[in-house]
Length: 80
Image (cartoon, rainbow, N blue to C red; front, side, top):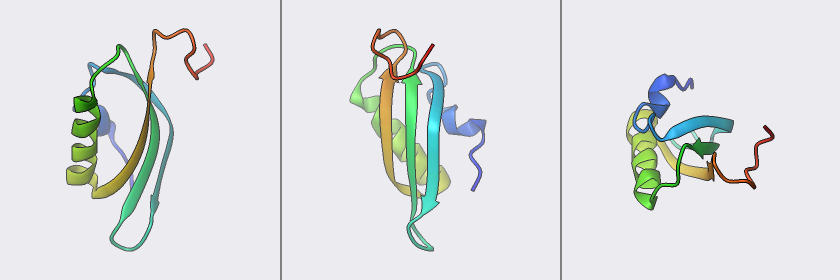
């Protein structure tokens, strides 16, 4: 499976970058995703609901773990 830039098209104006993206098959019919998403600004849980719905509809990923990081926080997990 390959994720195109369409993966972030839904909320491209909210996402600064993504890293630690892992996708694997749990079975022949179930895919799993884990990713860190760095947001430009803090956002609501609605953002996560939208991303999870798009992953399910476009890529058949029914289980996803998304770690959200905000780029303007001093304690960001990304080295600058």
